[in-house]
Amino acid sequence: MLIPITRETFEQMIPLVATSDQYKYYWGKPDDFLRRLLISVVGVVVVFILKTALPEWLSLLDFMAAVVIGLYWLWGPIYLATRRNQECRRYKYSGFWRGKVLDVYVTEELIGKEETVNKQGELVIVENRERRLNLEIGDETGFSTALQVPLQRAHRVIRPGDIAEMVVMSNREDMSRFSKLSDVFLSDYDLWVSDYPFLRRDTFVDVSRRLKKQQRRSRGR
Image 1 (cartoon, rainbow, N blue to C red):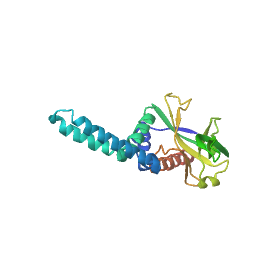
Image 2 (cartoon, helix red, strand yellow):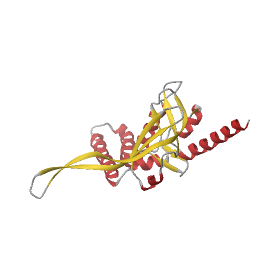
Image 3 (tube, rainbow, N blue to C red):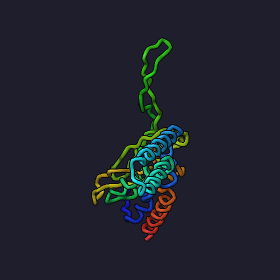
Image 4 (tube, rainbow, N blue to C red):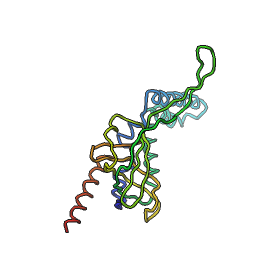
């Protein structure tokens, strides 16, 4: 079941600036932090090298540039998440979609390859694989979609028939085709299924409850 939502409600659920969950996502692992830190250090060094070739009246600008670049390790995740939010907010139309889990299964996917040398000095290609959860979700209208995310322990409870809710986005006014899907909320378990936390989740849950109340009132009339 698809329920259209206002632009204001949509922008509350997908805010312009990164949420805390999105910041944590892009903060990443220690390797990601070290990569950003290296960029910050190299950037500051480049600024100070260029400073020697620039006139003195630009010294304040040089200092400001060094501060901004030097703090890239801190604000980088905010920038990446905010840019991703903006990509979602470019869609003209959105809706609240409620369906059911049609199927759930686990697969093992190839996520990368690495070259290494074994004890005999031979070049060996090692495949990096990851177990992933696959969800097929559909509704009474016949529309269905599939979602694949990294497998977590909490996913063990998911069963066919569970209620699944999400935000859908499209550039078509009639919403006949969805261009993008948000993370999935399984209200039976208060469980989120996603690779990336698109939504401001507390706001989404509030909207879900409000829509359910409105539907109950409509049926009671």
